[in-house]
Amino acid sequence: MQGRQRQRIFLLSLAVSVCWHVHANERVPEGFVPLFNGQDLSGWQGRGHENPKKFAALPEAARAEKQAADNANLHQHWRVADGVIINDGQGVFLTTEKDYADFELLLDWRMVHPGSDSGIYLRGCPQIQIWDPDNPKEKKNGAEYGSGAMWNNNPDSQGRFPLVCADNPIGQWNRLKIRMQGDRVTVHLNGKLVVDDAVMHNYFDRDAPMFARGPIQIQTHGGEMQFRNIYLREISGNN
Image 1: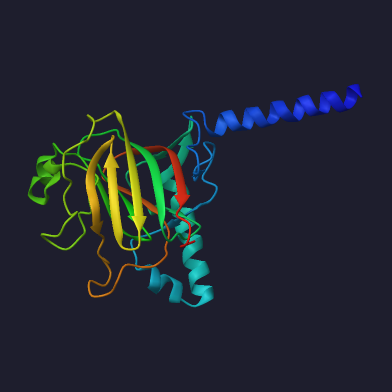
Image 2: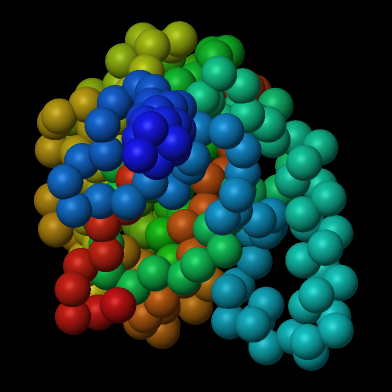
């Protein structure tokens, strides 16, 4: 009896320890699952800026060869430290191994150096823009309006720029809440509505509808970016 009790106590302690490590920053929101375990990049792979349909259409051997090269590149530029994903501003994009249809995504990001640039690809398509609103080099592209909108949408379309600039100062954490259902996207940045049920356009084929399914990708270039607390809830009926 004592042996079984010690075993149960050990297993309970182990479970609590693992749970604390995975969710050291916060509890998993109800109905969501973590996409990042806080320890390593399990569940993620490398992928560049490319049409998901064209990648899927590659012959199996060519696709496997390219994926292996992208994964090698991933581990040169992405790492995990103290429960945070860190990118050096270079390399392929951090890409989920799984594809998703309709979902809600929560994600914390922090820009370390002014002038950096990042974004969240939805179903493999660019992107929920993350940039420095005070970067004078990007003023011509509308950076002063802030992060969180679909900058790659067609010009003059709803959702291309955020409704408000909700970015925290460089060096502070920001939280994105993204809901994608069909081709429509709603985004909150730091609790403020920045995109309100706007259609996301297919960057790779402007005349085609948005992909029905695809991976989530985290893109960076130009400077170190950090990410944590990545959670996803698939919306039922479209899994």
